Image 1 (tube, one colour):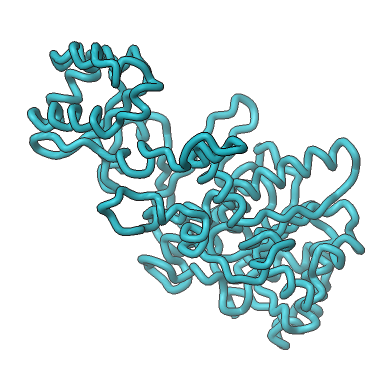
Image 2 (image 1 turned 90 degrees about the vertical axis):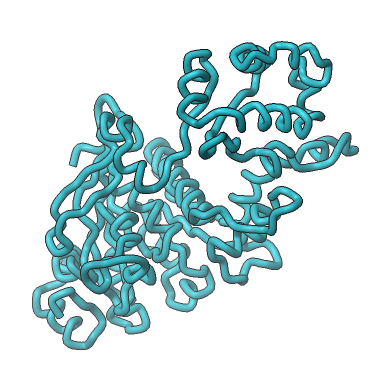
Length: 397
């Protein structure tokens, strides 16, 4: 492992998506991720297509670069094993509700008592100082609560983004928090407890775009940036649709010159960005009428030649063959020990010295239980006893 976190050990007490996204990022950076799972396994092990039970596509894409250990934390021996591991690692990441971890005796204060340098990150639904702190949090719920579902054109019904936006972004926030806390510890020697609330995290992104006039006190206008909320959509063409992003005065002049309608920019409603912002409906009606007259390929060629930001709308299938993604090494196809040939996305940044990369394929449930417990200092007979009592499990059991 040559990644930037190659000497960091992480106890991953997470399931579903937000936590596993965070710990996979850390694992790809070289950290040793010890994923603690209940006897039934992570809840997304069977979410989506699979060749074998417990190894579905969603799990494979969010749990590489990890080792799986099954511990029954309802059993005293399982809790003792967790604490022994926690005493030896650098980071604990958890997305179990804090009150549940406290009841188990595995909360931050318990871990810090045996490992004062621990970086302990809780991904929670809502910040623990508010009235919603005990509410359940899933991606759909957070998208609704944080205002994403309400941002749509007047004629459209509310809907969620068709990706697990709240889960995945919260995972990015959590991974970022771990990196900052490790840097702080490297300077001061101090560990700390960090709470990453999904609701506040996503609300901050939504409001940064849509606070609008309510940014000012007293308000100087309404909220919601209408281009994003109701106008921002692909333009229909004669045979399909395309995405065109024109923003600056120069780009708009170049666009209307390229399509033979340069006079549009003489209209004071459209000549400057401040004026256009209040007249987007009228502007986009003109653009829509122009683009509907020709086919997508014809427009892409013409607009690219005029240096106008434009792209075709890709499908999931077409992304797999995208020339740019293939050329940059975005996809990797490798043989999984049990699941056969697997395609994955392995590269989103390029580092000159410590390139992150997957360190191991997504694990089977409990694949590394014995290995990790022995590394933690348990004797072989102690491990055998834990397996016999059901406090620990391996994929061979």
